[in-house]
Every structure is written in structure tokens, then in C-alpha cells.
Amino acid sequence: MVAGLRSSSIYRSKPRYVLDQPDFFNLAASGDTELGPDDLLDATKAIEARHGRNRELERRKGPRTLDIDILLYGGLTLDTPDLVVPHPGMLERAFVLVPLAELEPALRHPATGALFTSSLGAVAGQGIYLHAKAPL
Image (cartoon, rainbow, N blue to C red; front, top):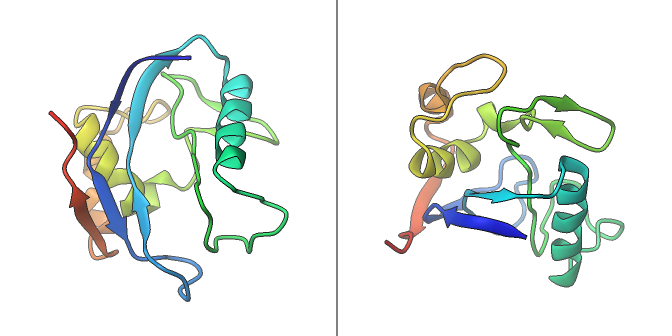
């Protein structure tokens, strides 16, 4: 389903929206797929469900077993009721930008052309820590 899969290191981050919950573990992954955006979204939701996630029973922004976000899909921009790409909250979240910058430091926002690394200063101090280095 995904070729050339690579991932960043694993980072531990403090919760941002619902604070009375444990820290989160985050990473960014990149690869090539023949799935279209909607089929990729369906595949990520199926993976989440296999790992015990039940969106109907969880508190929004609260604890969950697994949360897979599609941040980017090549250079595509997409805004549908089910999927927005680039992910609309990514520029305000250290738990997204730090692993993404490690994985692809020269990556640019498809709509603006700005380097994602240029947004790191705006998210400094959000409580993100290296948990485990990515394998070489």
C-alpha cells in the first residue's frame, strides 16, 4: 500500500487542547501510495479502528489509542467535508512541525511555498521532547 516509507523520530508532547490527559507520542511518516486521498483516508481510519479507536465513544481532542492525520498529499490542495489538505492546523502545532522538519527539512507548503521549518519559531515552547531516535 505504501512504498518508500520513512519516518521521523518519535516525539513526546504535552496535550494542547484537553489538558487532563497523558502526553502524546508523535511522528511524521512519508511514502508513496497508489491510493487516492479519499481511499487513503479510509485506510487510515481502518488502521485506527484496528488499534481500538472508536471515534463515537471518545472525547473530542481527548485521549485516543491512535490518531493518523493526512498532513500533505504531494503538492495537492484539497478541501472537502471529509478531508482538508494541507492539514489546516499543522502550522500551529509543534507536534506536527518538529517531526515533519526532521523528516523533510526542505519541504514547502503547497499553497504558499513557505518552508515548514520557517514556522518552527511560532510553536516553540509547546512542550515537545525527543522520545526515541529514528532508525538510521
